[in-house]
Image 1 (cartoon, rainbow, N blue to C red):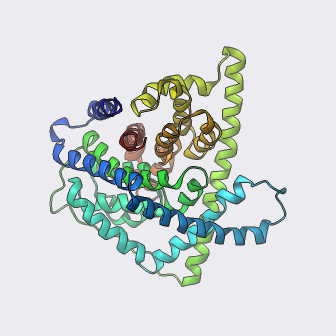
Image 2: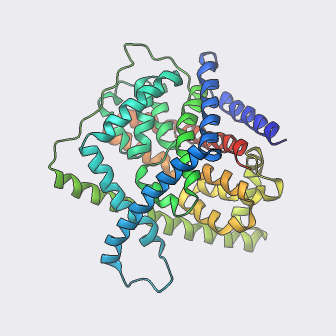
Image 3: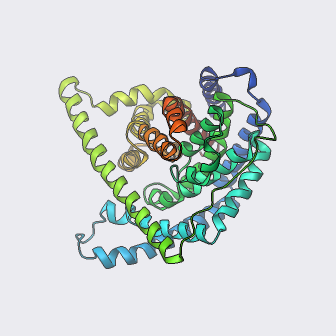
Length: 394
């Protein structure tokens, strides 16, 4: 039964993408089928085999150590501020982003990350039916983040068609930055974080191939990566420290605002209608939750968490999932977890269009115009990933 539901879910997702397609005649089915098969194989390897267990344990172990090292610096500055037995969210989840940001900067400076991003992107371009630029950008988005990635390809931004620009932005919204992966792993199981990152990479290409199909000619299929301005090693360290701190503070500010706003709206709706705003959203999103393999009895609760991610951000939704985990089955928790690991929310439209506009004003305006379509596609990517994972976990 679960397999039939998953197949039906895939048909619905592809159907919704097909309805929004800009040119249905250009959709290439072969790469899409190949990538769905790759998604299923990778999900199975990561979640159901010893190989996957070893990979995820190693990945989680690395980030666990990084969080320990980050804690040394945090305790030096903020030690004694927290009450015994308590773990303030800002100190334990957000501030480690600063240290991980520094490591990303070092790997960038030593040309290790650009090398990895370029060659993984090249390999991806052989299976996704798209260009080298799109493939590089998807990998780079997962490494350096949804706004910073456009700096690395800014030489080509002005030459891109609207279709290619959509794919670049869709990849940026469907993935997550390595700098905040450690923060996610303190809130949901590492195996779901790793699996979602890998599966979303292909999901972004699949949905973009349906919503915005196009063919890249050999003349257009050129990758020109922008080199960073030459800095000394310690200039670079200082810059990435400040960048990491800005991310931590921005996320903290958004959490304060969104959590408080959601509490206020929930209270107002409860007082007027006798039902919270999140419960209403839960009913709206419950059919999609059931398509993802979540039992009907848990669909409203799951739908509310999914909707919270869409209208606020993934951190707020992960906090809600942590609180609701005891009321959900382990399978439902896993499915919702992978759904939450992406930047698919309304605020990302502004972040991505702003990042592109800062580099090329005309293209930034283009991104702003297809912003809702971008969010629509990225949300379908998250649903697709959840359906694939529902086939694997028991």
